[in-house]
Length: 210
Image (cartoon, rainbow, N blue to C red; front, top):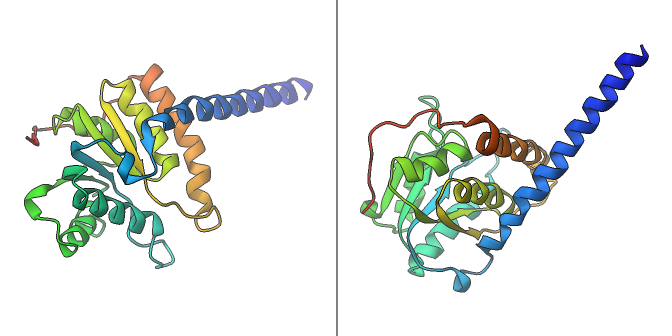
């Protein structure tokens, strides 16, 4: 019994240390992000990280709303010239890139300046595919600050000269699972980059953005 308790305690300490260290390590990459559009360096491509337009309860997802609005503002401010929309398209009835594409078109973004990555099943895939498939070694990532930190860590660790724009965020109470999941995702990101040699689920044919 004592052995089991010791093992459980040790395992708990290891998990806690992993969470704390990964969080601290990834958070350092916030220095590559900006909160104000005026502070953003002009780049050719903005990588808009997808999410669902609606929550499981049917409400508008404000993470989605703020990311799309930010991409439109950055484009209209000439901070980006092309928008690469990367998201999950894992089933016939669920397609993040198409949802975003329609809203960008409705806002007046020309369709020739919007590029869709249907295999952005998670942030790691979205970032690596931006380089491997769409040939982007320099880009602006568009999402909330907490999400950008992890995306920047992945990008910079893989030779991508990435910066990020921090969109408006939402309160913890709106989506507590999202913020909790982020802590676990940071551990996975560190493992993917430094230990596991993880590759995107799909690569495939290049779709170079000039």
